[in-house]
Length: 154
Image (tube, rainbow, N blue to C red; front, side, top):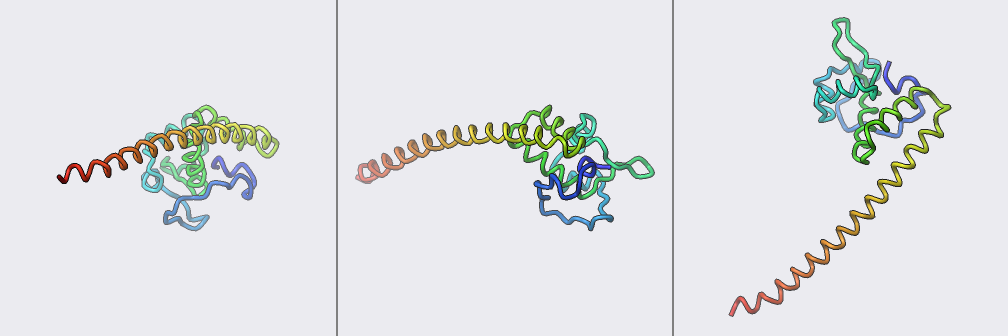
């Protein structure tokens, strides 16, 4: 069972998969090397995610090899987005626990994601201010370069 299979299929499916050659549901058994190729994550990272509880229920083949499914790919896509937000790993693990606990945790999940959203918005504002400074400097040097060009050609 995967992290996402513990809830209703229609819930928490906000993270869309990357464009990969996915197999139809029911035939979607991917090896760790295939998931590495799809996601860009290392096998070490995938094993670590499993160890820390971010992906605790990865199916195994009869020989013990990990077998990921489409829902696992969806989950990894969401985890990747959460990483980009700067969400701490502990919060990502907590979010995964809440998803597994079921629908009664919606409020806590909402609060966690809303706090992350506020942090992202603040970082975007900070980056926009930084971009504005860079644009002013670039424009200054572009204008100065144009002003100096006629002097250089003499």
